[in-house]
Amino acid sequence: MPVPFETLIPYGIMIVMFGVSGTGLAAFKTWQNEGKRPRYSLDQWDRQMMERDRRLTGTLRGQSDNPEAPLGFELSNGWKLEKRFT
Image 1 (tube, helix red, strand yellow):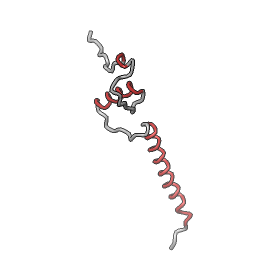
Image 2 (tube, rainbow, N blue to C red):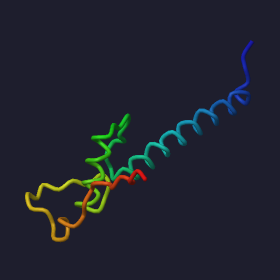
Image 3 (cartoon, rainbow, N blue to C red):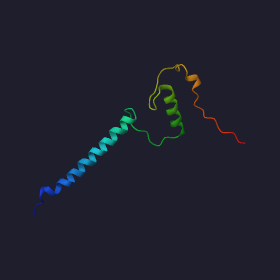
Image 4 (cartoon, one colour):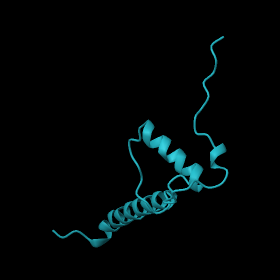
């Protein structure tokens, strides 16, 4: 016994909407990371290097191949001060 095609329309709509939302989320994540793939399982070293890149270039994912630091970078210290024990 054949199934009327009208019963398959909701399933088609759901499949299309899952595809659209997945593609939209992937595009947004790529746009948010400046066109680069997202980073997963970052450790402390990766976070420090991303912070250094942000201080050098102004963006979190930007990198610079300039061997000389820009003016004012010598005052931009990445070390965080610890609170004193009293």
